[in-house]
Image 1 (tube, one colour):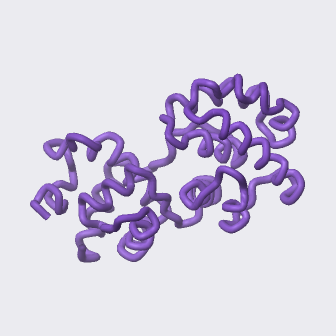
Image 2 (cartoon, helix red, strand yellow; image 1 turned 90 degrees about the vertical axis):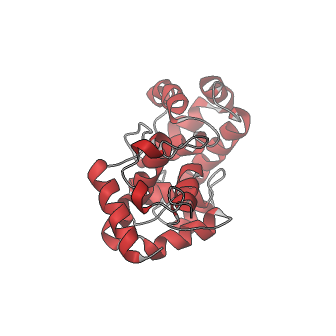
Length: 209
């Protein structure tokens, strides 16, 4: 896809959502980190519901460890893979305390060293909590990037690198939120709502690409 077309696409998406952000509810980088870890293979709605009560009891790494793995599991039981996620969260909190004074680092390698945190999660934290121009490629971003022709690739990493090359600099900070929202509500998985898509005239999927 040409840079001029990408410019048009993101200009339109930005006009549709001037201040896009995650739909996860959080107040601190720590809360966002926990919510994103829990969001793997789970909906934001289910994570927000579980976290509302969880964060009332444990909104710091220290308090999460005090809560303990067993009680943590009881609070997130409604979320998929809760056993593994609970173990990772407790391990992550211990590392945050031992190595980072209880705070969430704004460094990719340090984030990815945390249990339950991969490249996508690290990108979300760096972008949403610390305002860095990273692009987290989840299923929505992966689908939209490939369908539209913005950045085609067989892996999230390839798509991420393609997007970083073609997304205009002024949209980099919000790009992944813009693509997620478009994928979640318009360019949906099974039957994309092309008839209600503001960027359909630029889309390779819509134009037989």
